[in-house]
Length: 321
Image 1 (cartoon, rainbow, N blue to C red):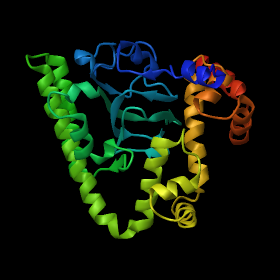
Image 2 (image 1 turned 90 degrees about the vertical axis):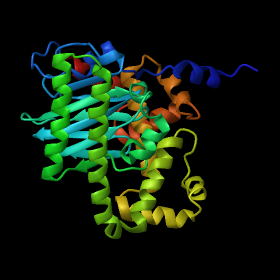
Image 3 (image 1 turned 180 degrees about the vertical axis):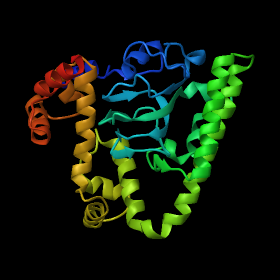
């Protein structure tokens, strides 16, 4: 039997989930950039799957968007707010931040003196070196369950920046085996980041305790299932704990309710669909498995004080100015 809801969901499943190609340069950069660093001034990608950039010409606001590639950021100066899934990060000098395919991402509140390096690479870039599963297993910050924001110690800053500048040098010289050289340096960057990650985890395990671990597990599950699973009791069952224990722990650890974290994830997904697709409000409502468009509109307005269309129009107008 024909189902309008199923048809709307099917149509709107074509959400623009950015892949790493030449057109993405226009998503994160403002016009021509002549910094002389990395691939700032060109839409070129190394074998279509890797790019190194500085913050020169970086747009003051990006997203919320979804993408099909990894990001690795390294802070030099100033600050910016980054939203990665359910996590919000105040990104400063000596910080590293990581995102992974399928994650909702946004950048905002960039300071005037902000300076950073960042790398974008697709899943295929490492395919001949390490499998995607092994990559995510080896580096927990490339997963929902890991900490995606790391503050480096001074000696770690020097090591990571050294390898970034080696990649920049390789891009300028264009010697044979360029891909292999970049893979090696990028792998070393991830290894050094993981060493810092492990060092800091060892020092914080006792203070973070089981409550923080439960919060991270809950956020991971919400990030994976928020469209189809909306009740705290279902997540509690997945974690083999009571709903009451889950709710109390989440509120204590995050200052928000367990339901609020589900709603935040839904809202981020809705904003990405409104900004980066031409899907109607009805299509988005069914894509997000609301019972009807009016229910979705009430949900959106309650959290933003705007209707979905008002948010779309206001955000698109701001991007044009």
